Image (cartoon, rainbow, N blue to C red):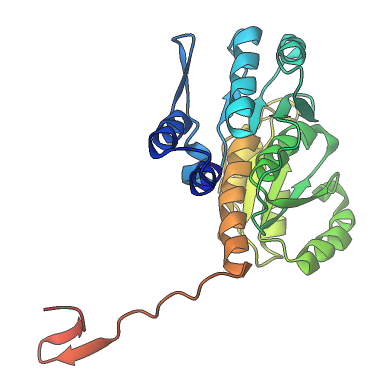
Amino acid sequence: MRRVLARLLAGELTVEETLEEIRRTQLLELAGRARVDLGRTARRGIAEVVLAAGKPPDAAARLIVALAREQGQGLGSRLGPDHWSALEVAAQGFEVHRYGPRSALVRRPGHQPDPSGGRAAIISAGTSDWAVAEEARMVLEAAGVETRQVFDVGVAGLHRLLEPLVELVAWRADVIVVAAGMDGILPGVVAGLVDAPVIGVPVPTGYGAGGEGEAALLTMLQSCSSGLTVVNIDNGIGAGTAAALIARRAGAARLPGPTPAPPARAKRSGRGIRSRSSS
């Protein structure tokens, strides 16, 4: 939206052409089946993510590339081998960035998201949690959030967590995403030690009953650390989105900008307090 308005001010577009460009950023129809929400980034600061699972590989690849073509970057999650093959063909001329085994970010050459000033940390308990942690990182970096990652610091060896956690606290992360399977204790441990918001992601790794993430989910929901936020099992995209919204808001508060006008002072009347602007 900013780029369109800048082109209007520069005289590159007429008013009617500008209106047409704005309409196109709100909605794009592909082959009469998919309606891509191109206005989501402008509304929320978070780009739409194409869920590849359940979609034909060619269709998923077209959607991801269409987003990249129209708004500079397209995100896809849950890509299988056939999806990757289709994306390599459809994304020729674009930059393809892999985030773990199942997530892709496609960019127009030279495109970079506007930096938000926000900072987010991603912690995973074990190497089995890597794929879901990468989903969260993809969403955060696409939203212009700076990230730092710590891997393999689960509670089976709690001493491994302390030093990197101290470093993240010193870095002043605005939000921390913690992915853990098995018993899912790590997010609650982290939430009890830091003053930043913590988002827990239950990962479907484990043995036997509860080993598909149910045990980790219930542990996080019943955490003794108050304020721990929990997303659904294996939902790295949801965790990354929530973290990006927090980090972007925190980053915007640090960036220089116009000083907001002070709120109207209230005055007392015989019937209580009312605003000066009240009649």
